[in-house]
Amino acid sequence: MGEARHVKLFRNGRNQAVRIPVEFELPGDEAIMRREGDRLVLEPTRKRGLLGLLETMEPIDEAFPEIEDQPPAPEPIF
Image 1 (cartoon, rainbow, N blue to C red):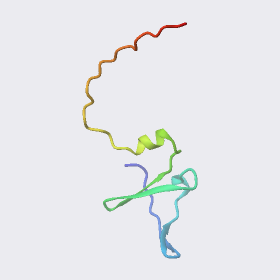
Image 2 (image 1 turned 180 degrees about the vertical axis):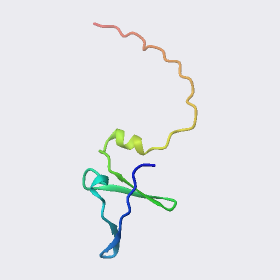
Image 3 (image 1 turned 45 degrees about the vertical axis):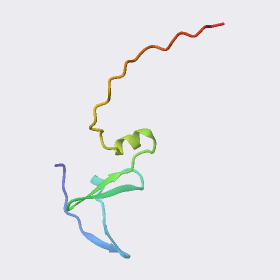
Image 4 (image 1 turned 90 degrees about the vertical axis):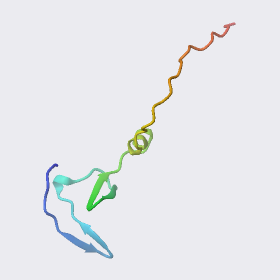
C-alpha cells in the first residue's frame, strides 16, 4: 500500500469532512467516493468520453465466437 498520514475529521454543517493534505491533493474540483468494506476510496473524476466510460466497466468473462473475417466483395467503379 502507498503512503499514509493521520488526519482529523470535522463537521461541515451536517456533513463529516476531512482536509486533504497537500501531498494527497487530487486534480480538479470533483472526485468520486465509494465504500469498499470499511474503507472509503476517493478518486479524481476522469474526463468524460469513451475512454472514461470504458474504465468504469467490468471486464466480460465470456469468450467471443470466432468470426470469419472475409474482405468485402469488390464494387464496380465507373
